[in-house]
Every structure is written in C-alpha cells, then in structure tokens.
Image (cartoon, rainbow, N blue to C red; front, side):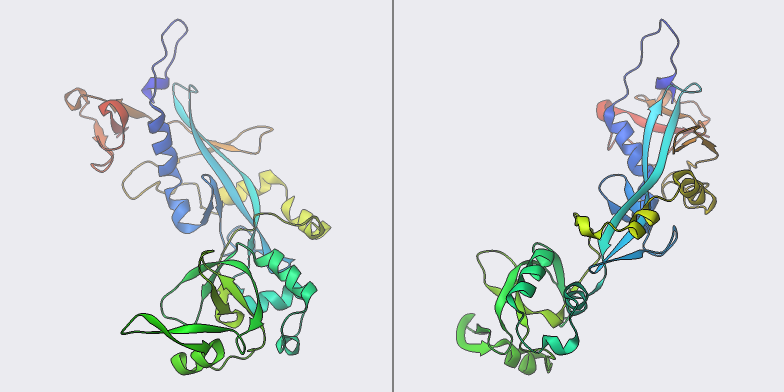
Length: 318
C-alpha cells in the first residue's frame, strides 16, 4: 500500500478509515459464508473442520474457531498484516425443545405427561428466557423469543380462534384441539407446560413439542459448567491450532472474494505470538483514473467510487 511507505522526515499520508474497514470485510467474506460468524472477527466451523464440537452438558456444545483481523502497517514498504488466533465459544445444540428440556432437567419421557414441578419450571425458565426458538409444525419458518414458561399445558390452555372472514375472535379453543383440527397432529405431551413467546403485549402460547432450538450462541456459561474436560478442550496449544488452519487450506491460498484477485501467498510465523502475517502485496488508491498506470487493474466496478471517501478508487498490482 503506497500510502504506508514512509521514510524519516516525510509526512505520512492519511488513509481513510473506510479503506481499512473495506479490506477487512473482503478478507472475512469467504469465512462469513463458510462458517458461523460471531461479532465482527470471530468465525466458527460447525462441520468439524477444526475439531468436532464437544458436549459440555445442559444442551450446549463447545466449538473451536478462529479470530482474524487485518491492519495496514509500514512493514516491508507497506503491507497488510493479517492476525489469526484461536477463538472458543459455546452454542446451544440444534435440537427440539423437548430434548433440551430432558437433558437440562434430567427427565425421562414419562415425566413429561404432567405439568412441570415448580423447581423444574424455575430451572427451565432460567435456561430458556430470551432464547430464540423455531416452530416446526408450519411450512413457514417462524422464530420467536421465549418470554416465560406458561402455567398450563395444551390440554387446558385456550385462545380465541379467529374467523378468517371477519378477522375477529369467534370462540374459545384448546391448543390440543386446534392442532388436531388444523394440522391433524396429535400432541404427545398435551399436559406439558406451553411456552410464552413473542412480544410482551401479546399472550402467545406454543406447545414445547412443536418448537426447536436453532444454532444460537450461548451468552454465558455457569461456573458449574466449566469442568476440567472443557478447559482441556479449550486450552489446546494455540500455535498448533493456528498452523492446522493454515495447512488445511482454510486461509492459505484462497481467493478473498469473488470480485478480487488478491490472495494470501505466504504465511510467516510471528515468533512468540500466536498469530500469522501475510507477505506484502501492493494496493493503490487514486482519485484520477487517467493517472493510473497501464499495469494496474481495477479490482471491480462494484468497488470503484461507491464505498470510498473523497472519491478514491482501489487498484491492485497486476
């Protein structure tokens, strides 16, 4: 990057912040497609590419991924330094709410033929409150956020059935009967508490057995869950993990985006730092197309003059 080339006594050239942000987005594009992205710079493969997810109990699993960030630097006449490090987090398992309930509360199927006991209900509320769940009985994939655990099961919980012509509540209907009439579905656990979902100003109840937990990151783990087995899995030597990612081809020698010809050509271990850095390549910024050398090529019309400040265009050394 020509703006990074610096000699003592020279005035530094200012690089728009949006340029650095755009380059970081470009380098994270493929990872965002292939892996689950958490935050801006953390990526987690769920298919076992960097090690299979491991069970940590309570309907959750630990996953190893990587953190990456890109920074311009005045190193070797201007380069982009790519930092890669190990990242660990936990996700809820993709499973039906019923399976999550039995694993979390350590219940058997025969225990679900009644409403939950108060202490079970309290524990489940702690786990499910504000968690997103998906309904499975409809062809439309609807997602709701859990507000609370209802007091009644589908065999006693009622709602006002709306007339499709008048759009007004016509009669009181049991959830158990509604699913039988509307979806020809016989609930296995009609006595089990319904979940209260959706906005606060609406009383929306849904039976647990028609809901599933999607792939959702766990916000925090209880101290009781941090067993030695979990720590052993999370504290795998970082350098080994980083080099495994490079040699497996998930970072090294891959195209950055469909629009760009940039590639990461070579990785160099950064001594005593759990990271890696790219070899240098040149990126040029010009405001006047007529001054661009013939050896330069525009990265893409999509990138030209559309996402830069002060009318800059981005060009890549051929």
